[in-house]
Length: 345
Image (cartoon, rainbow, N blue to C red; front, side):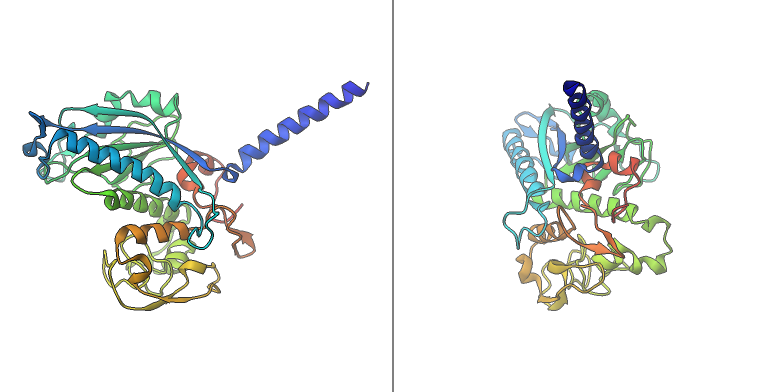
């Protein structure tokens, strides 16, 4: 009889552990398997600048550059997901990236005719077909595709794109036919090997802004009310103008003291609560200018990302705890399936 009693208890405990893991995946770092795809149109031992428009360096040099930035990007994104790590060196990352496969093609990017532009557009459907994308997304649980290509006036591109059962929420035109839709969501990033790490990170910054604005309901909010939204109004400190109307945490192009796009080196001092942001505005404000982020874009991106409400943030808004916002990067389908918002349901 004793064994008959213990068995149901063990089963109940097992089910409880499984359910808790399903309900609160934000307790652990979100796993983001990545497939990297590189297109190198070659002319002899060099990249064919006639194809790229702005890059004609050697093939080996280009390989080394893209491999180096890819590795640094993994390290940067993981580090940047550590909530307020600038104050807490023990902060744990919310994102855990892994490169599961790399494809290299010594040929130009596949393109398609653009309806609205003279230059062709990158054919993302063709790329996904070429790498058997369905297998990687559905069988290997890949969440992101990182494409190394070019721009140079030869092709158009989207810095980030998305496809999946919950639609396209990305820094693109959100055309739901420009990527194949599978049973799981994936985000497609298009990098330019003529540029560097900062530009690759900026692609991710804009994608974060896109998903957080979507979850926060900005698309359905009248523009004259954007300044009241939790993310765009209270965290960023902006409105429909996209400028900083009160120095909050800012966004990719606009630090708290910015006066125009890409104003990362502005020496003007303002008081900002980015390092102690609270939704009710009670966070301690600190006088700062671009020296706080070494007057460069990459350090600004890290400061901003580490200030997003992350693991164990302890913040509340209107009596509800703020969620770990990185779940909208690392577990989008789970968040959408459960109708997650920026505050806990």
